[in-house]
Length: 420
Image (tube, rainbow, N blue to C red; front, top):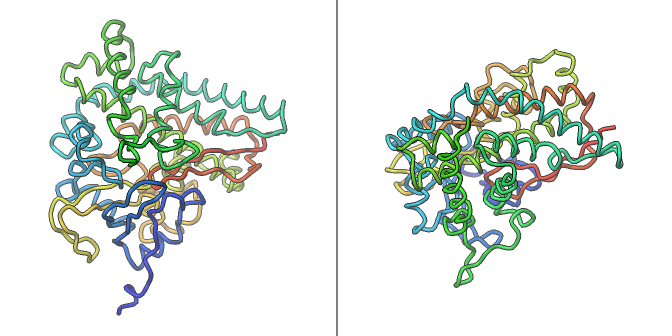
């Protein structure tokens, strides 16, 4: 038996592990000894067991999988580790995230017409004012209370939600719906976020991503599109509603994608970045003193705390990756958080280096599915951090951060800081 084979393969699937922290030590063991490792998929938190999957942990292999849509398909089994119900697949496959070229390219081109940098940049002044207002509210709460404030509850959740609502053109009266839908879909593995699972007639949990469970969201998307055709404005939903090529389920699924992914990416990255700076006061001081550029700092914070931990592909044919034979139909899961700490690519990856360059992190993916909203996300993060630096001389944790039970989203549920 070789040394590599003698090393035990750690479990990096169990979503409960991530509530304690991202298992970076186990990721390193996998990268060094089992870069493509078979993971069991047992029953966890009431969700039935699955067939298992290959965990891909090295940066080069993650990029290879993400770029090779011919071999590693988003369409065959969608993009979450847990298999969707077969009857849901036809509908789920209408979402851009769950398509392969050339069909994916068609949808991406249509959406890109609306998702322009110019339209996004026009939100900068509003986003900055919002960050300033929310931080002022956090300071008031701390001053009037015990000197602390939960920046997730009073700043980052609201900041991401309201910015997305502006971009989409969601009326103020409906904006809380976006957060409700996001928590329901993203937090389904976390009992605090999702509550008791909904069971079908056989007692099996119903996947919250199932179209049957998201009827209210899809109905709202249709109603909003009708409203935008009657009352156009400078927002994404107006542009999409007036594009005759994007209709029906495709429009509904894009609303779902932007509502959930667009909201939670910034929610997770913003709170995770603030947590990283609170845990590294010397790095925060260097930013305030102008010793590090904010643009490079945002990239390093994204590397350090990627909002998305994993994405799944399905092998479209027999292939080989890092010496492992992969059969057609096998699930192949890339671990973004592991790739971002790969010593083969990043010098001293366990050190937060706000001036790191180059910084080829994969927090927004790679290949044809690289995040369409990355420009908008980076803009929001830069503006928020600028305002934080302006008003907060230091970031001091008042309690350990609360983390999401999830092997998909690197979520922070609470971030209690002392702000006096």
